[in-house]
Image (cartoon, rainbow, N blue to C red):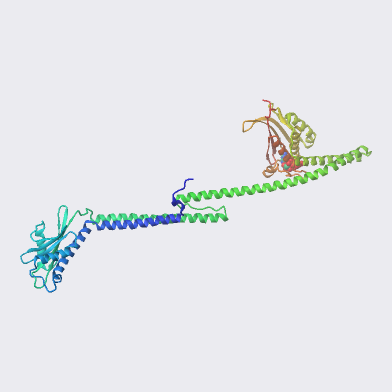
Length: 513
Ligand SMILES: Nc1ncnc2c1ncn2[C@@H]1O[C@H](COP(=O)(O)OP(=O)(O)OP(=O)(O)O)[C@@H](O)[C@H]1O
Ligand SMILES: [Mg+2]
């Protein structure tokens, strides 16, 4: 699997700290750049130039005033000083200055006494060298000498600027004069200070904004993460709780929604698992009960057969009609008990089918005939409605007879007392998958069931009758399912019940079509 960038291995805390540090560095860099921009503006360069020119002029004046120190100890500066002496002073001062020209002016004679400027081969000196601004230099130097205070001028040319500064000299016994210095500034930056200020301000504001934005993003992210942490901690105790993140950034909202969905699914899953566990426990209990019942039924069957034999013998040998009547009642009860024992045993045994071609219409008629007398006694009318399409299907005839008997028995029992009608219909239907099925429907007009009872009719041992075992429909369900069919119940209290049995019409022995 391709590895992501190395940074993704770090926690968000470190990544954000790194981002913050980078923003701080950017901020500092912008500040320095802005400062540099300010320093290289036209006015900044000018003021720096003016300062250095003024300092040079002052240095020249000072050096002249202390000229004696530069001479041999016993020698004073000659008055007026010689050109060599002045050249020495100029050379000494201007050596260290960069691009500044300077010299001296004497009021006596209104002339420049000496000037020097650094060149590639040292300091050159001379008096009569002309340069464009010489008259202006003389004027400024004169002004300084006459007024006894520094004078300064700025000459703006086409491509450059010339700065001139003069400082008065008042050494005792010396001719009044002044020291002057001049600097030519060429190729000045075009930017003015206001523009530089504006640029610096915009850059500074942008940096500040990015810093504030980073802090806000960090705060939002931390807030969102804390909210999710808190929500998850709450969910540990209560899965119904939800993380509220409606006012948080979209990504946090999406994460919160995904976690909420997961919690709901998890809760549903846990509930389903509990239900399955309960159902499994219920089935285990029923299975254990079934085994116990089967064991008891098995033990009861043989003594019951002996009792029946003895009672039959008694009935045959009895001379008194009262004894014969009692024997008949006893035999009836024994039959009922025997039926119950058989039913319990058939429930406990695994279903084994012996299918064969069966005409369902005939089988149903046959089973109904068996109940005819009982139905008449209960005031129940038996009605059949068979479609011609129903024909022969492959079923275990005995087992299907057992199913129909249980259903008919229940229907007659539901109509006991009030009487009613049991309509049995048979027809072919098409299943959802397209295959053909045979449908047998038993509709009675009995007392019906409430929803709770209807949902439990196929549970083994579920009964609402005092003498019922609650196994009738449960066995029907097992048998119909074993045939690959289905059994459904629909009932309305005090209206009646409809039991639908669907059987596959395939397997070579299909319904007539
Ligand atoms: N046609 C019906 N009308 C109303 N209730 C019915 C009908 N068929 C079944 N029931 C209800 O379903 C319950 C379960 O029926 P089932 O046949 O499984 O057991 P049972 O009839 O109670 O006992 P058993 O059939 O073992 O004698 C019945 O007790 C009854 O409450
Ligand atoms: Mg029953």
